[in-house]
Length: 182
Image (cartoon, rainbow, N blue to C red; front, side, top):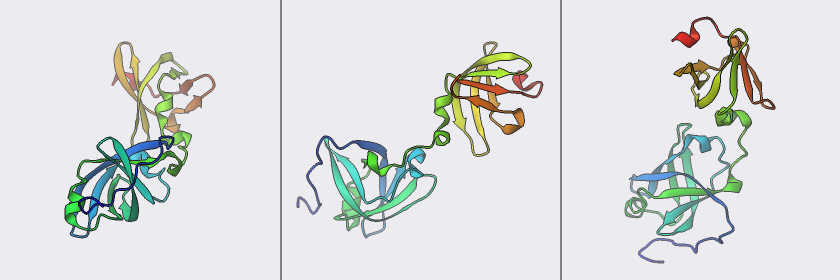
């Protein structure tokens, strides 16, 4: 023990760690620490038993006694050895990691970034452009495409007879008139 903290030896280098977020401030007097877990990892995290916290140049494992995590990524952790506010405050701003094996494989449609570079075509207009960026909005994804040197946002909704062909890397649509004029 050093200064009242529980420090474990860093794990072997062959352990693949993924940065999932950052610790923020202490909450309460018993050592709880607020954190932000990147939303892309919230649904993929299996039960959190160990968090790795970057201290100096090492990732130190901390066993998680209890935690709460909202879908937004806002979280609250209580870790073994962190049992008062002072110890929790010392972790403010530290990056947190988990083992790659503690993450479920991403489902293809959980992250639509793979659509970047796909050709967008319309049944009437033909080639529209290449997907430049994808935004996963609550109601439906939106792709950014440059059409006639203008950035256009196209919602990916079934009403446009959406046809995504992964083999050809195309997105086929039948868009309502005027959508590209907005």
